[in-house]
Image (cartoon, rainbow, N blue to C red; front, side):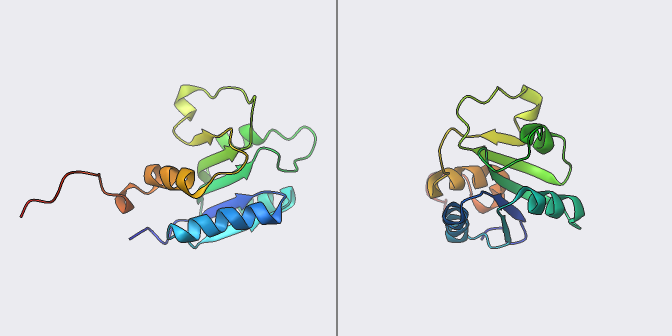
Length: 136
């Protein structure tokens, strides 16, 4: 059983892409999802949220203001425990001490399989180790 209490934020300008990601997460058992399509919404939700988000899934092509450093915002924000930034070919590498919480994907859109792999890292209790048959 997945941890239904995980709070997930999806930030993408494209409604269809937000819905695809949300649907894939729903199929994996996650329902506490806040989709946003503008930078102002993202900043408001993150800044004024009463509890941190367990995961933020953000498109690198998300419509951000000139001078806004999305990567720095995600790295230095205590309200975002884990972040997946997708659709980011050519992004700079991330320092090894930050790699635990920031995941960068070249994929244009994370599919259900990629999201499942990510959720196994974030919510390991839901995905028991794939061992042999249980002893009787």
